[in-house]
Image 1 (spheres, one colour):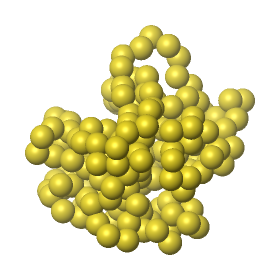
Image 2 (image 1 turned 45 degrees about the vertical axis):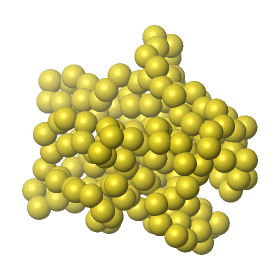
Image 3 (image 1 turned 120 degrees about the vertical axis):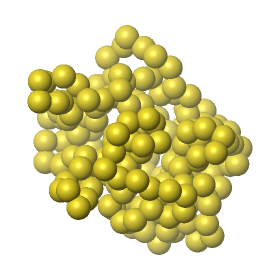
Length: 190
């Protein structure tokens, strides 16, 4: 089984909750991930943060953490219609183009929203959306956690269908998942 993700607009404050887009709510010592390009460092796009306790209620595999928060970042600006110095096509993306972060404890008092702003102080992120989770088949075509991976020996962490021709799969090797080596996650665009 996998976990289906549905997203919807909301006016609700989503600080330290599962959410899609917006700004990640991270521990003060967690750095926002950047990708190195020939022109310098470029911030990866924040995709979502997942409350692991909430996700575990729909995770029949039992492989994922039962507490804490998972964060997903990737170089998807071009896929969502923004200018980008990073041009990635189908296949496995290079190292540094995706980052999965994890914190075991969520603390409302010490976490900060890491806001990306332009030179005038205006937000550079899409508005945060409410993210809800429910069990689904492991080959569900929409947005999902877990389920069938694109490659053998890997576990699917997050799949995002941007359109009928572009599906991004963020995957991790079984051994890296077992030991929580989240930084070894890879992205494959199908």
